[in-house]
Length: 228
Image (cartoon, rainbow, N blue to C red; front, side, top):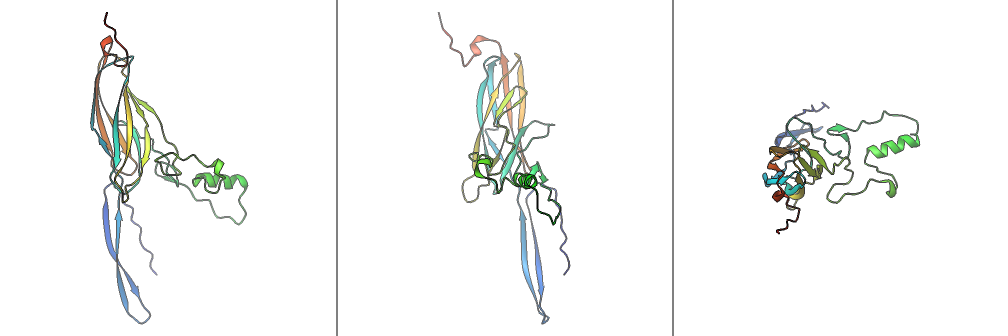
């Protein structure tokens, strides 16, 4: 029986392939079965797409929020970054890094050692380990996901969380996640930036951020000003 050829497509655009499987019988008859394969990629959306912090005192950071949503049916592993910098994605089950598959051990006739068995269980998502040794389950994150970054400072911006996984919507409404972005200027000057929410093997989204650092006491929005 001829081997099927494997075709690797490097793209983040959804696509669909169709074909047919021909089955030949011993009596000479043939039957054709239609085949359809669809490749889907994750995509994130962010609202609002622009944040304007106004005037912010250099000693009184200001926090606003955006909401990420995943309208697709595919889990979206994401990480915040800026133009020209490589994002640090969470480690999904079955991988050892962003896009890197777990290598399969070579075949052996001997029984694995206890250390090798523990290492293999850890690489495969801690399957088979006692419940006390399994990774903790994070609310809203598929089990087995590791390497989540809870906070990252990028220039004058502090992002919490800085990475995550938004599950595919399935038959429900799109899953959402609130992201806090703190503007913490260090100089009394104007800041204009863009934060990118990169998606592993998917389509990214971004938010524009404007703000102005200030040393005026009236811009201390967290402080209490007293009128004499």
